[in-house]
Length: 518
Image (tube, rainbow, N blue to C red; front, top):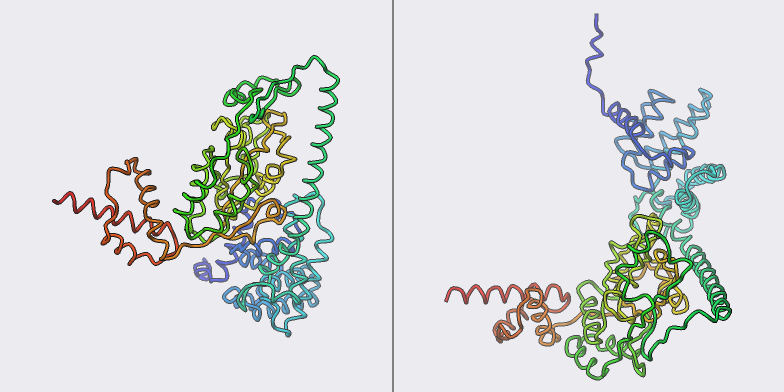
């Protein structure tokens, strides 16, 4: 006879327990699985893993089955239900002599507590802090460094929460573990910047010593011919018979044939008054930016300026300003979309890899055929912060300093190249997430949004851009009529230049539609 109870559908709690067990079984993350239990759940919860409650419920059901309070906690996993369940697990630990129940109780508190703004829960927070620190001291040495850093941020961020909760932006019910992760990362930011700066200083010192050794070898080898370099030219890549060998070199060198041992010209500085007049006509609302950028070119025979960072709201025209600056100066441009770029690609990839290629500034020079090209780092604030493929933030440090750019060690050519004449312009909406060593290497200027008063100055440039994108000659259409300008002014009251362009496109499209009917 079959028991009728076997045919009953599983309860919501049963389904959550089954789902949590399945999540643990299916998870392919081996690194967090090697952590002590409280640290494992701390990492999962700080990453906003929604299965963390089901996973913990499955463990509790395995160790202490049949706890009635667990169903309430699963339905409403807040501080009140979590502390009640944790207290029951502590009682079971004593009553049933199961020390594992204490560990599970700490995990329940960990993922249930909110920001410590209620003094009544202070002891619960301290209990979790003690468990985290104790587990952190026993952290295995074999775990990956990035995971260890993540654990460290969570542990010490939680310990600092009672006195720094006001530093964390969040609602009253913000999970404490999420706030701890954010606070811990913020606490380590300056130390990370200092370590990066120290590593960069060591790299510069190694390059300086390599230069000295190279100079000594050149003095000792009188037969080595000296390359004649005309005034206003520079040799970016010189043949190195020691490192520039190997079966893959031919494939790497092919796009660089016009650079190696060839003096490349430096584009001369044009009449700055003409450049300023044109920029002021198109960007009258950014007069301070125009003068700020051009001031670095005064008195220079060839185009060269220190790295510039344009900071302003989206749609204010930062990217277009950089493009017009490049066009008026007459230099080549290489645009890098920082949101999709990584340091491994921009800085060049090693010759050992199948995807080996020189660094992007060197490729920009090869394409432009002159040494003082412009690199546009668009939306630098959106660059990835993960270190899996190298951060763009880190690799830029070696390019922005003249001393290191003069002898940049290209990983594909495996020789030093002279990139000191490359000009850099970066754009960003915000700078809060940019490392301080990177900010120190830029001249920062705020880029304003245009207002309604700038409309008449903006329209000709916007129309020209639209026609260029459509590959149409400016002479093919008449200028906007007063009525069309009035329509545009009605729908654009300042702000985003992108929105202004959309309005102008609609007006031009309507004009074409009306013309086709007559």
